[in-house]
Image (tube, rainbow, N blue to C red; front, side, top):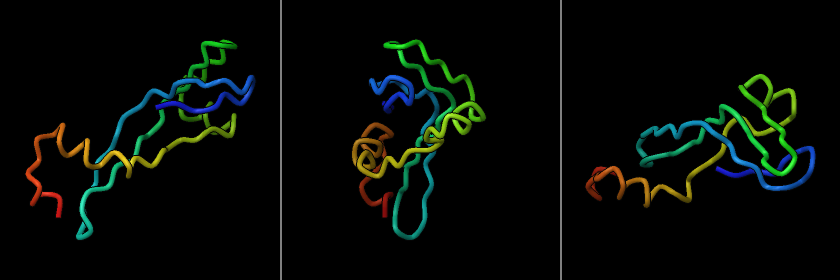
Length: 81
């Protein structure tokens, strides 16, 4: 996942994992950020605490990616609902 560097304003990359949850409305996805790296200026936030101290996102909504996620996970269409 990508985000804006708080130091230089360029695009950097979050590392982390996508967490899936299910309820009566279907599947929800959230990316839990574990670190951030900006190659443009070298900012390297190595963990959740450093992300919080820098006022960076610690989780990102991935609702727009649910259809692709379902396809990649080989879920049946009926399984989502």
